[in-house]
Image (cartoon, rainbow, N blue to C red):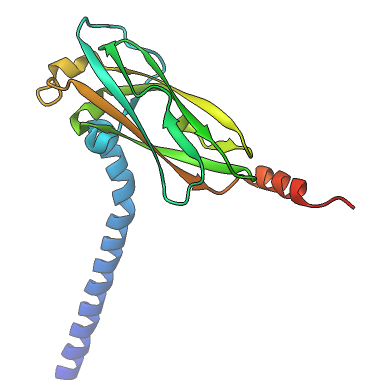
Amino acid sequence: MSDFVSERAKRKTALQALTLVVVMGALAWASVPFYDWFCRVTGFGGITNVADAGSDAILSKTIKVRFDASLERDMPWQFAPVEREMELRIGETGLAFYEAYNPTDKPIAGSASYNVTPYEAGAFFTKIDCFCFEEQILQPGERVQMPVSFFVDPELVEDRNAKFTKVITLSYTFYEIDLPQHTAALAQSLLKPSN
């Protein structure tokens, strides 16, 4: 009888351990989309909003927006904001440009991640259009100016944490990604010597 109870206890413990592993795996899998949703809703971590058009209200109060650019290590591009800072009225649509240059002899694809500081202002920084919404491919020696249009939501002045914000910094980091198959195939065909 004790062997039966011992065997049953072992099975129960094994089942509990397996259940724990499955639950922890499911939580880990769900944490990334949940965190992304949380950041977009609250602006936590400098995540911005997206809109189809500019704000309906424009206040007389102004705010400075600074622009920052960096590259992930081993990303061979050159990347910088065209203008380092602008001042605009809260609710007014701003248009800024970043410049990227590929000094290499091969096409390179990149994608930009972004951040807004201070973090409490992220929920009120709204992008209308941005180069960061899609991957960028620069051909050898190509230099481009990439636009970002945005506004600072007038509700910022009503928020108890963000209303004292005087300067918002929009930062982008470009990192290299794999070339799309059609672009990579075209690049390979151009590099092959003709017979």
